[in-house]
Length: 450
Image (cartoon, rainbow, N blue to C red; front, side):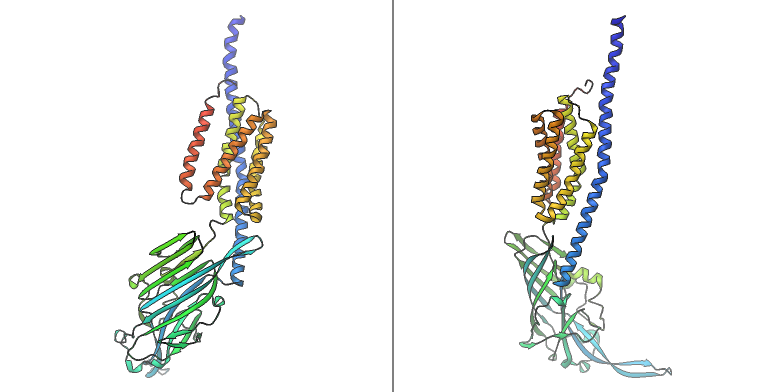
């Protein structure tokens, strides 16, 4: 009777052992899902702190100078025109009005040297710059016949040359404008209906049936970006700086660009075929202020920090679920191989320590920078978990091995964050190796007997 009852009990014990492992895995999965809640909260915290940084950047721009857009020059040439209108009695009356002909440069060349400076305000950093922009070019004589303008009505002695930058607060001195060798001092535009906002203008006599050359230099300061407006029939732009981490704005990439340890040098050469502006027009003050047209004609450089710390931290927190998952899997495999039980509450404590890691990273990064903060936070968290694991498993060698595994995981994430273009490739290969390693060690576990 005894020999017959023993085989019947054995399958039930094996099934219960198998089910207990599956149940524990299920509870561990629930713990991981619950840890997503504080992980999402930390990502929101990072976003809020980044918002504070953006507010600080705006404050710096208000006190220093904002992003600069170099616009112009445009020639404004007034002329007289007879206009017939009906008076209050309904009778046609002819009177003379003054109209304006606007003309864009035939050639326009802008060359800018940029000296950057990292401005710190509290725990936040901003990039500001000083720049010398040399502007040269030429205008052809106006084509009056194209617009049916009588040459005798043109007021050549009242010609104006208009140019501007987007934030006049950044203009460090009053530029001197040279027109055919004659120097002029610009003044703020008097008329609100001007083709360029924040305009400066010089009044000069234009010789009939002649074009002219011009040149001036803008000594200005700004922050974050320096842009240029493509308004010449042929426009050439060159930018050089010691800044090593540029990004390029606008619709067109530079024709040639060099970015290395010495800095950047970029050149654009553009023709008017894709320019959204006519070469000349009359009484169209909004031609150069149309937002869509401006977006299509702006080029320039953005002087950005190389993945600022908040972007890095936010990218790091997005890997939190992966790190917790791999850590719990590694801990579970160690538990199965060494046949030492680890309570689910201890899994929760380890997960909590890995979540708090990201608040340490954020708070330290604002004080000592991302790289040192990552090192300090990682060492603290790995050390804490290794000591705790050693006390749970009563085995220092396993704890040291587990600390090494965590070091590999955190080192893997750090390398991914530092890489930009190759992060996906490196991350995919590293994850493949990690999964293969876990598969190798999991084969030693007898899942049907515990």
